[in-house]
Image (tube, rainbow, N blue to C red):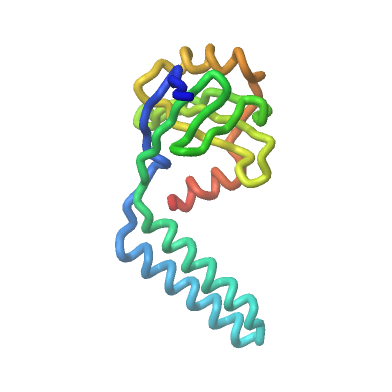
Length: 157
């Protein structure tokens, strides 16, 4: 069965900020100093966690944003090849940012354990039009910025 999407667009995964060599150098110095202090105090596990965490942060910061395919169907939202059904979603909100460089985003809270929150940038369509359609399937909820969102924005990964 070939289904036709009601809305369909492509968009970038997240806002990417280029980090210079000095940012990675500072990350390495801080991680090295913390892991060395942990080793001096005999806490080998903490040193391993610090090195692993710093490596993960560095690799995540070096990633470039991918372009994804988004589509809204009668029964759910598709991101690339993954379909999230409306029946598995709790509520939604359309977020509009003060910064005009950031596109409006569709924020959806789901019942999935591994993806409890989906944030989709809205391109090429009026956010009010998307809102009106999703509102027929889901209740609107309050979707405020989480502590993790604030930390990521502050550290600018």
